[in-house]
Length: 389
Image (cartoon, rainbow, N blue to C red; front, side, top):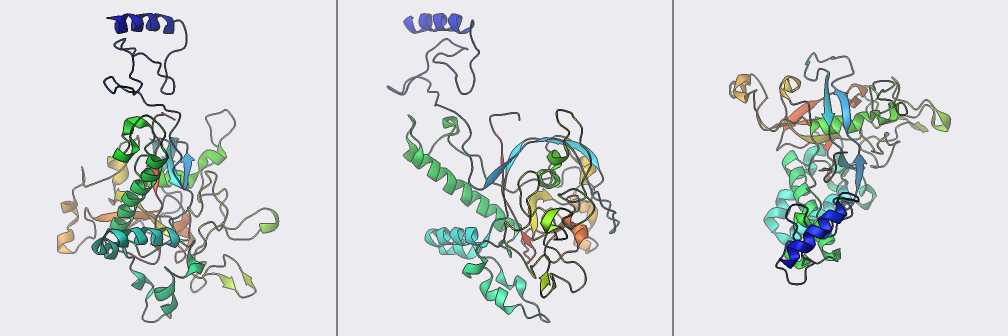
C-alpha cells in the first residue's frame, strides 16, 4: 500500500515537470504507479540504465528520408527492371567500407576453432580468379592471405556465406559489449534486449537501403529546405567519372574498367591504379562517408531478384524477400527459359571489371545465392533502433 501511495505522489509531481523519456524513465511506472526495482532483491520490474545505442564497429550512420529509387542511366540492356519511384527509407547504419580480406581471415580463425565443418563452409572460392586464357594464378594463391592484400575487399564469397559472416560478427560484437557491461544485469548470462547494451544484428543491406546510401543525396540538400538541387547519376555530383576539382582534377573517382582491355591506364600515368581490386579506403567517400559505393567490387544485398520489383513493393522500407505477388513459376526457370528463381539475389555497384554504366546506384544484376565471383563482395548494415530518425 505504501509503494502505491508513494507512486501516486511521484506521479503527481512528475506531471508538473518534464515527461519521462527512454533515457530518464523515472523511478516509478507511469502506468501502475509501482516503483521500479533497482536490482537489490530482483522481485520487481528492472529498468536498465540507457543512454544511447552503442556504436557498432565499422559502421556509419545513414540518416533516412524520402528518395526516388530507380535507374538514372539510359536502360541500355532494355531490362526496365528499376523504374523510378518514390519511397521512404528509415535511418540505419552501414559499413564505412567493404568487408576486407583481414576481416574474413579473422572470421576463418574463429570458425577453425569452432568446427572444421564450419571452417570449410566459410572458405572463399579462390578459384574465382582462375581463367584458362589469363595468367591470374598469383591471385588464386595470394589474394586472400598475402599481407599486402589485407585491406582489399574479400571476394569469392557467396550470398549465403556473407549472411553467415553477419551472424558471426553480431555474436562477436555483442560478446565484447557484454564483457564491458557494468549494469545490474549479469553479463555472463548474455544481455537481453532490455539492457540497451545489445546491438541489433549485422546483416546485408536491403536493395533500397544500399541504393539510398549510394546516392548520398544529403550532399545536394538545400539548407533548411525540403529540396535537393539535383539527382545523381553516380554517388557524386556531375555526369563525369573524373574528379573535376583541385590538384586531383582528372583522377577517376572509382575503380572500374575504362574500356576494352583498359583496367588502369598506362605505365607512368596510371589513373585508377588498380588492375583488379583496390584498397577499401581508396577514392573519395560519398557524402554519407561511405567508400567505394561505386566500383571496386559489386556488393550483395538482401533482396531476391524480380524484374518488376518496383511494381509490387511497399513504399516504406521496401524489400523483396521471396516471390510474394510475383511467383517464380511465372518465369519458367524449370524449362530453362529464365534464370529467375527464389534463390537468385541482387548485387549492385559495379566492379573493377565493369564499365562505368554499372557504377550508377540504380543499376542492378542478379546471381544465384550459392555462387561467387572475383567481382562481388559485400558490406554489412544494421537497423537504427530507439529512434524514428
